[in-house]
Image (cartoon, rainbow, N blue to C red; front, side, top):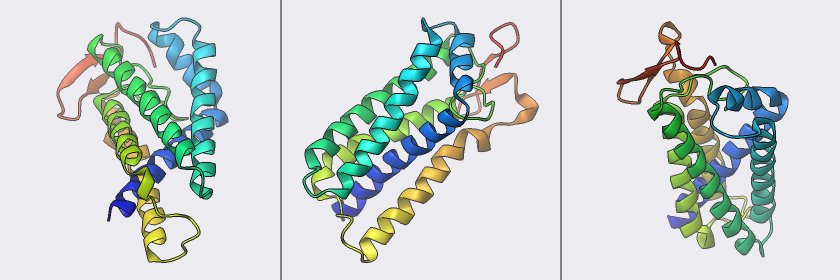
Length: 196
């Protein structure tokens, strides 16, 4: 059972980082523009390039580590890096929300506002990275082409799709200028703040 849980957690994190890097690479100016609008970090173009590179390297290296029998140490390093990156995303999003900067999150090609749902997604993924790290020694090897591997891949793909689309699904275009937390509480407006 721990092999299934560790595999699902690990693959969900890696698949989500892969999707994130593909989205950012398809429209790199979206992240740089959002970071510039937040007016928090210096050199937003450089930071955006580092974020995209980090996501790509972590996803690619993690997938390679999963495919090799002797990649457990490398996989652990990838999961530590993923936890750190996703934790930074959650902390940055929480800071933006607490200061009323609810412009675009810059997390995908779509113009989505920074809301509690973006922070919740990053927090859940950081937690999954930790679960994957603690159970990385028991993940199901890819050479096993039986039902457990199929369950891991299908569950991971499902959780990746659900988590990736969570902020968009919870975004109410009628309240596009108001950020909402997962509880529905108002957390600030983009009017008078920073445009998305």
